[in-house]
Length: 199
Length: 199
DNA sequence: ATATAAAACGACCGGTCGTGCTTTTCAAGC
DNA sequence: GCTTGAAAAGCACGACCGGTCGTTTTATAT
Image 1 (cartoon, rainbow over the protein chains, first blue to last red):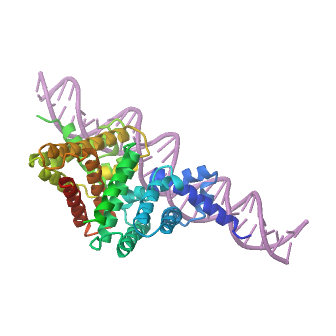
Image 2 (image 1 turned 60 degrees about the vertical axis):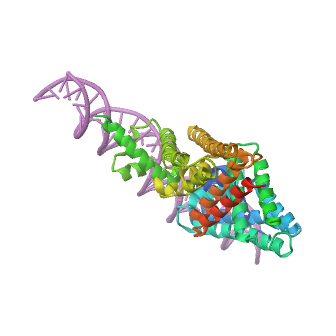
Image 3 (image 1 turned 90 degrees about the vertical axis):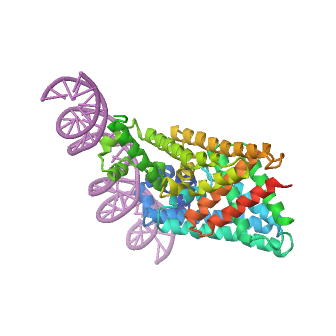
């Protein structure tokens, strides 16, 4: 058999953990709840991980893998420049539905939870977030060198602002249940892009 | 005596609760931990509130009161227009230190926690966040009618984008520990303001 | 100084948490 | 068909959770 029974189960656990963590956060994700959802005993589930912290880290890794699949990789298939930036942005807005994460982006939830809680999970999250910012900055650089954006555009500043718009969208859409959130976010994105295009 | 002993204690509890909630979140803020911090018995503390949820709601209210004191009120003392907007922005960035909240803005932490958890605390938070966005929008409108900003500027859109920058700053400063976060946020703010000024 | 009301206490409830240790189930290789 | 090792279950643990209760201490008003 290509994949053992254990790996299958592990896979199912992490998928479910990702969905649950998006709703309850990494801390709110408890072994008992997760086991009940999977119709598994708590100890049977626990045996797959050395600790709760390891489960959290692996859940973040799973989220990152899915994120690459449904956001980064497809966006890199888009033409370099503005289209690629737009693809990154649009796919980011959709990605909680694509995975799926019923509770919104797990990274946003984890960011607020872990920003004051040192440990392996926090370290991993910081790493992943830095990678994501770097991915955006790289796309900006590509757009710049091919003349789509002005040479004076600061890729890191652009990445910061684009990421801020994403956070603003998440906040407005999920907490405030603002139906116009996507529209506002798109308007902000277009303004950001336009400013980076001309003077 | 003007204020009873009970009110004093209550006051001390809520101040400490606010600080703790900024680090641990509203859910992570436990009665036991809070009581231990205040050198109070858990039951003695609990007697001041009908339930944990009520404590959470009152903590949010306390946060809102402090926020008005250290952010909104002083900013409203600044001249209408761009200076007032800048004051709102700058004071927002400082307010976790002003209150103090060792763990960053309690509203940001609560937003991620509560966006999928229905209840009184969530309802109150949504209310407060809407008020905050409205406060920004009102300041934008004032700046607009006195000719500081273009007439075509959408106050709600401006508020959305300014708020997004704040969230981006909080993320970069607290989670990523990016020393340049404040600089990036200020640059984003100035760009937003400049775009709303001229065509 | 005393009566009364407010406030704080300590013990305890049922429940859930993460985490070990031991046993049973079960699928694969001979 | 039996063996064997992985996978899951069972069970128990200590800690802590929010919350209740009856009692004791402390503050307030007469």
